Length: 352
Image (tube, rainbow, N blue to C red; front, side, top):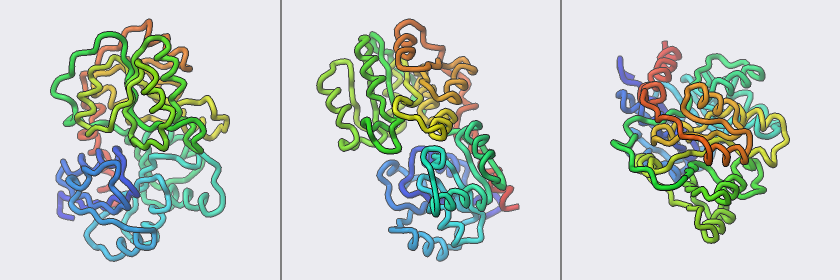
């Protein structure tokens, strides 16, 4: 560390788009991000963003690599999973920050070692970063964290298209993010097929851009793409290109499917999420329609930027009969490049 430059060690099994945006924004402010990971399957651009990228095979090697380094000021661990955060706690005396993308204990029951691992992530780290205020409030009812920062998964204004493409004729809904077939254990909420089927049956075009184009998880969507002229399954695109591409569509589907979920903790987790895609739609000039997901839907409605639907039928009704909200113009309040200063401030507090 120099007077102005921080060296931040990111730990992430396989970095996601949130980690990439944080790393880019920190590097843009002159800081050096060093990455420890097992793979770079989802965000290979991290190689260009980070000052160094080092791979590890397992938790033992992760711990050894952390112990062997002396070139960082703070460790910033991203879940899921939680175990790498504990490995960091056990192998450094530098501040460890836990970035809770996925509150696992709300999605599924934890016991024994897994429950203790989550407790240590929330209570033994120097600070916890949450993706929404609602999630921070839920965590505060369960754990006693030392410091807390709420940093939603904002987009980066530099990735915004210079101009939006002309809107396609007709009614088009886009979906960005994870997709799973029905019955996927722990990921039932990513079964969007019922929404897609209802929308296409109403004559609405649906364009899906899966975060991970894995045919093993997309069998029903691949079949729908072949059978239904109103459904379009698209390949993965670089982030900036993706935002330009979606600007052609009128609506963006956000939120989750609660159809097969009865566990109250899982519902609490999902209702307090604030997904990346909500902000990506706004940056791409697309009006969000949030289904379920109370925190996200409330945010969209209160800011006059989107709609909140209670179920698939209401999603269809909104898309068919409502007018898309005017696009966002004040991007500063949702720009990771501006908001990352709050994370930098947290680091400096921990190092003071």
